[in-house]
Image 1 (cartoon, helix red, strand yellow):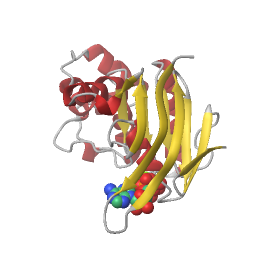
Image 2: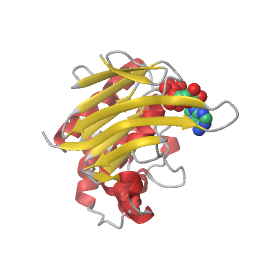
Image 3: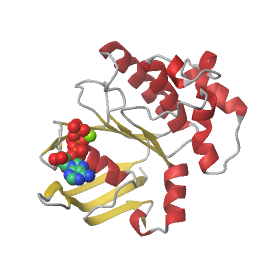
Image 4: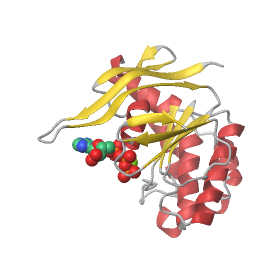
Length: 222
Ligand SMILES: Nc1ncnc2c1ncn2[C@@H]1O[C@H](COP(=O)(O)OP(=O)(O)OP(=O)(O)O)[C@@H](O)[C@H]1O
Ligand SMILES: [Mg+2]
């Protein structure tokens, strides 16, 4: 299977008075179409790793290769293109824009990367996620679960190669969090998107290809 993302001996040291090593040397291979779940206690370094993998935060040491290109050596423009076109993001607090309709929120990644708005596709994704009736509404008029489904639509609309999700359902109740996650997996399989997901919840995903445990900055395969 084709390797999309590969990190080698990546570490992270946050500077400051009490400098701490948040991530010990970590290597990882992410192949196309796979689902990776990273678990671990609060403060163990899960977001640190995800941010490094997803092109948001440069590691202190080590390399991050996306399709054999060192992503932190790309110039700003190419880094933005990578984040906008190849990667999709879902955050714990959906980070939807209150002033924009659901439709416009979903379109944001297309706007940033100057891609065409394919209305048909936006409707199709919204239908699949059960939010078609809400396209003209604003985020605050939606339930938590619905808002999270908008965040999924936004992450998937430009058909990224990889979606990075950091505790995407942490503020939903158990039933909704299971439902939203199942939809996310369904969408990833449908559009052949690779998924790297961080969560506290055991058994959130029934059959991921890989489950890791993060402990004090050390990543272990379960
Ligand atoms: N910007 C930062 N500056 C300094 N220290 C940081 C920074 N971000 C995180 N840390 C520290 O690095 C360690 C790992 O943090 P990280 O956010 O990766 O944990 P986490 O596993 O995602 O936790 P949670 O489950 O609570 O989100 C923690 O000790 C945290 O305090
Ligand atoms: Mg975190």
